[in-house]
Length: 263
Ligand SMILES: [Ca+2]
Ligand SMILES: [Zn+2]
Ligand SMILES: [Zn+2]
Image (cartoon, rainbow, N blue to C red; front, side):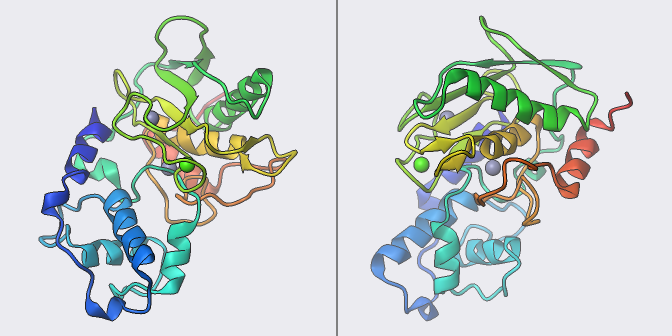
């Protein structure tokens, strides 16, 4: 399971060099802690550079990803980005660690919704998940079929805290959801933090259609994009749910994996 393998690497704290350079002053102790945790979590491991595992290198990776000046120095602007609610998957191009980009090989991919949120009626969740799949399937020659029993390729659910995989959720805010790249078992599965307040756009909260479209992008094999207009951008931005759609960057990414839909 590709992401599990990746995260075994990222969860080895002993291999991390501490701390950031002394210029990193001007941030409070809790912010410093938060920054270290953020960088360890979302910039887990870079096999390409020799010092890719130092916090300074991770900070530079993050600055590059967010199109900021690459200084390796922590400041209040970066802290602000770190405090935004976001997806729980790392920003490093995870799949580039492996020779083959994982993808589904059958033309029909099944999904099952295992558990629901108390924030939305179940029929609404079903509708929004179907819509999220449709946004992707419009662009690629894959069809998604919902099943109600048994094991589906993509198992979808809401959970809080520790929920049976190696990536416990963290209460309200910060990590909103995560999903696994295509593969057997946990592969393709998408989990949403039940400690968030989920909305269909009609009230305050995290837009579930947006989050579902993003997570299903991972379920189909896409990593994060550094294009702020992309659905696959890692931080959550409030979007208009009415004319919400994939960006050109998302479409190019998914078609690179699966090709174009011909009908
Ligand atoms: Ca959370
Ligand atoms: Zn993500
Ligand atoms: Zn999970």
